[in-house]
Length: 582
Image (tube, rainbow, N blue to C red; front, side, top):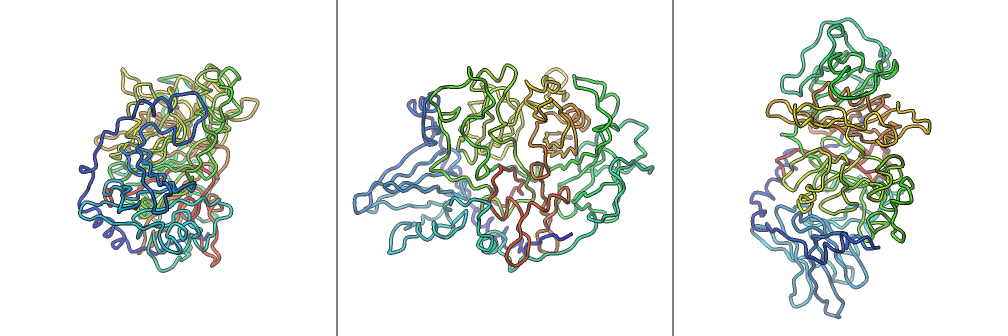
């Protein structure tokens, strides 16, 4: 099977980022940015509004051009300092600050409107709208989802539908601005892409292998399965030992080419009876999901950070058809008063400031259509509890109480929890957030042990989706947080066929403190790709080989990876290396 390698001078890329941030300007630009009362009232009001009025912490500057045209620069969340809306007359531009800790964007007058980018040592004047052909015009006509402005100190987001993006232009953009490479090469790797695999339900007799010493806590396995192993079929992530052909259930193996990333395989039937029989309430495994192989990928959070990006189309911002009539507010285009994000642009891919450091991507959560409750108590209150999400400090949909939430603060702190009213105090500091249903695992406040969520066994009130006949077993993905000593791990789980109960027991067996559902039903919606480095190149590996079909092919025949190389309609999480630009 073919794979893609992107030529990369790692030392050059990292060096330029570190040099640019040798002196952090975070302290100089620290600001509490309390929301003005009228803006908070706009945010809370159940009335039609704009995406700008949904931002309670925004700050605005205004000026004029020489011809009298009004210019407005809105920082949508000054504490995050990443996303701006610039309007010139009736034209609007979605501007990104790729270095929110190191530079500030201001609208100055000299004597007329001009953008200044203020760094720790220098101030750069950006003449974005002057000249016969303005820089804005060039950027908007470039066909790039992120068009560089002012020497790439800023980026203009352009609306580029994923299905119609120019792959050739995107390829050039990757070469010039992301990996700074000379070519994209395609190599063949057969370590884990051979057709000579045993059936996934077959366990083979072997001595138990040791779990990676610097990896997460291994799963608790029933004694009779300790000397048996899984032969993975179609598993696409190479391990450090190229001869590794079998995986002991619940054991963690180091991934090749990416420090601090680990992989594991398990059949739920091999889990310790101590877990399968309690604590907590979950349905018993059926014979099919008990034998189905599940794969997990763990990321060491001392090395890596987490980001999130909306898809070009999903999740949408209008009403889901699921909530009952009594939960809806007549006259609103969506549960938060907006029906779309205009004039903001949804990119559907990793932004340039993170792309050079990204080591993995995976699909986010449900579409808006499915991301609200149709049955149970949540279907009739709080607008049906549509799942909320925040990208680079911008609230696109409000975070709802009692929903599972993965969020990242301005300092990179990553947490997963059930959202409460008191947590709204964190909103000014949230860089990324994604909600998706109710918890699979929650921490028992008394014992500190992860337990199945109280709705795991409830199809309708849990909004677990599945068939109309309430058949819960299907292909699913989820994520959990695990703590092992002083280390914390974000774990992605791919469940080839499972009910929420089986997912909960698997995450519980691995010692997870909290777990939540992601997306489901198809490999496209449970996609995960890893980008290990080998000989100065970035290698694209897929968790399951079939996922490679969701990447695209450039005109020159090379592979462009989903989420990194072109905009996608679905939302995504990405994992990036810490320390290079923080």
